[in-house]
Image (cartoon, rainbow, N blue to C red; front, side, top):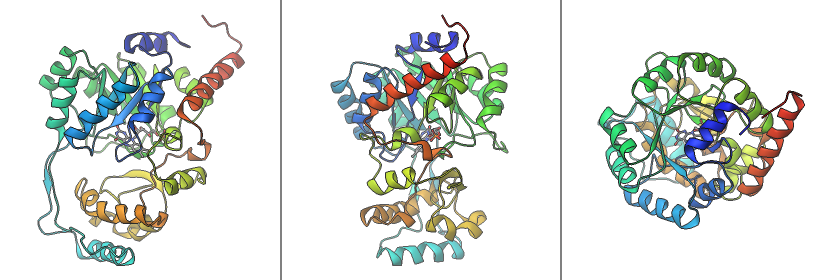
Length: 360
Ligand SMILES: Cc1cc2nc3c(=O)[nH]c(=O)nc-3n(C[C@H](O)[C@H](O)[C@H](O)COP(=O)(O)O)c2cc1C
């Protein structure tokens, strides 16, 4: 399909097109979205990071009821964390001000978060999920072996060529590369990795690793897909483009905010989670801008703000919601997922035709 490396990638995974709907933890990747993308010949992906193991098992069953095509599940590589003394007073004040505005009285400022990685992997090994990806770190060798023994293709997530090399050495079968443009959290896991844009990241990483590379960040249409494949990627992973489709579980306010974005609407912020992530700059983000160094580390700030974000969502208060989106959000569309898939394929064909070089 389109290039030699993308054809090989599609054959290995049983896909018609090298288009992956990004895993998006926290609600957007419903079974309806995942199965629609897979049915359309791409790879639908569940963002399982915040799911309870039983809910993950049920989600997998629902997807399998809707399609017999391959799909993926993404998990978080995290340790247990606890914040017995709570956040610094400046952060505490900012959180309590927002809580008051939203009439939230049960803010937990001293959270403990347990990793659910082992429980997730047990489910994925038991269920023989076709593709398993991880973010925020590297899976242990025995977990990677167990997944592969069950027939899963194992994918790691990197933000620099150095991280990609580490994932290849850990025996990942393919690597998602997240450029600086990407919406949501990126999977940086080595210390002091600078932000790298996708155009710089893809060719340099392709020169350094021999496993297939999946380009991710700011890809919204056939122009982006063709560009990524030209740079050497075997496939693309698109998040924001699928946030606004009919089957996405993103709330109506969030979808509208993504549709209203421009190229300068998003920033990297630690405000919601304690880890830098890209989303629209709203009132919540602004209130924490001067406090970035005092915000508790991920996932503790994420757990503290869960109640606030849930209340903001219930009240339709976009100014306090985490409006994750990539830098090219303005190119998003509100259509059914299958229609988006058809458009992406047609557009990529159109762009590749414009190169006026014979294609096999
Ligand atoms: C709302 C949202 C949630 C995300 N959650 C995850 C996740 O759970 N796991 C993951 O590996 N990547 C996650 N990402 C990052 C995507 O995998 C992907 O790299 C990113 O969406 C690409 O940039 P784009 O949004 O411009 O397409 C998320 C992105 C968004 C927008």
